[in-house]
Length: 274
Image (cartoon, rainbow, N blue to C red):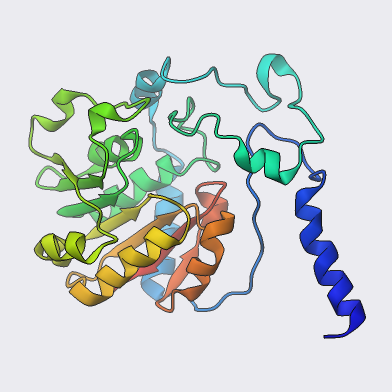
């Protein structure tokens, strides 16, 4: 490596720890990387149709439910219309955990949030079996259930019961019709994926929205490959542009499509397991 290349590399990485070039209510470090695999025709067709359908999706009922479940929505310019503080280092920003357990107060914002796209995907694919890896507040599960066919079912996995999760949107009545079930298991472990092997093989659509570090997600993918996703589902990975997820997303060799511009600001990726 030449001295000039070394200096350029150091300067580009040190920049992350200084003043950031933009100011927003919520920011995370990210990186643009070259494409490592191309999407399948199925992914392209599904994405185009889902984006068009998302334009007419309404999530007003869920928006109403989410009100009062977290800190006030600061709006585009921050609280009370003022710009958020400037000059914080990347380390300080990374340590900030405000809003981690709070559902978005405006889930219908699209693009920016992925919920309208998620609803459109489920309506378009009409899956009989949906798996969600990471229940959290339950917002995604509720969105998917609202678009699920009558004979469909969602099984959502987490290590925390839904009624103990801070800021949970789920209610007991959301489970009474049998179309939504939570299982307390970690599918990133051999014990987890082996205990749910039959369910994994029957999945028609999978949403992965868990730790967002790349570590747990690699465990999920190992399970997918070992057990085999017999129905060839489309798998949607959330937050693929977060720092910890970048190398994980690059490692996926199956047909994939980065749909961030029409999904979640922090990254939305589709992978074809057909």
